[in-house]
Image 1 (cartoon, rainbow, N blue to C red):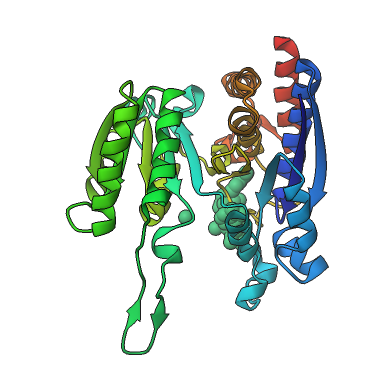
Image 2: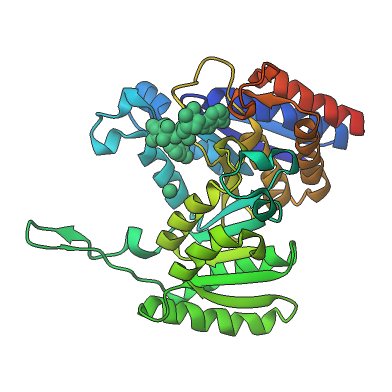
Length: 356
Ligand code: NAI
Ligand code: MG
């Protein structure tokens, strides 16, 4: 298979973790006889410095001629005082909007050898294997009208049938690749947009008789996410609820350095990035944990390229490296057996070579 990947390294640890992920993808390509071409573009603070724009035309053109996008992270203290159009995060919002990446996928899975890193009890966290599917381009964050005076402020929550249908379909399709359960989260006891959401889920489920479906109100779902997170498989929800629930879910496994994400549209094109930010406090030291970014490339292989075996091979290699007790500083819990970003990536690559 021949694929073009746009690599947008971004700021802080972005270049370090994407470099690690590209090395892993190159090994996977060699082992499974694929040809991946990596082309580099600029986004975020780095793009502001070079092009005076957080998402330059050159970068959009590069992504348009690619099959998927790998992104590091953007932002840092250097740009914190910039005016809003010259903020690094603007680049992220713009790229999601430009490519209509309406489905944000955030898997959260317990790592057996790292249960102690969780703030929850080990017996609660060990069963965790869920995927939050958040609608990313509609709802309150994009609603018109939106305005503020000093007497009042208004935000509008609008969802169209088409917007709900496509995200709900995505969730059902994903559940088929997993344990076959969808939990739809809404506030249908109060919000009209949630009532429409619930109606559409109930219509769509008729086409997916193999999928178990449940509805939960968002307040109750927020509690169950902590008391019994192992009960969830796929959670599908609107933009703001998904923003909050996915951040809540991200602390369950105990390390930001482990969590991958994807933002995709219906034709399979997508942007893959770690959940964490640019970690300016550890940037440039060669100690960042590249696991979340490497796991994001596994999602790229699975969801954009349909390469399930290759994706699972990467995930298994990472599990094994952890089981063997190899950690970067963020997970080492003060032990002196701490690996650098490069050394830890070498372990993953050794493991991939061993398996072949
Ligand atoms: P952060 O995720 O960058 O860092 C939070 C803490 O976790 C820090 O102590 C950091 O060192 C640690 N950490 C995160 N990822 C790590 C990794 N892979 N390996 C080792 N340690 C890791 O969040 P923070 O500090 O709130 O934001 C820093 C900058 O990143 C800000 O400019 C923020 O706007 C930006 N940001 C960007 C995001 C993105 O590009 N998607 C998402 C979140 C924040
Ligand atoms: Mg958030």
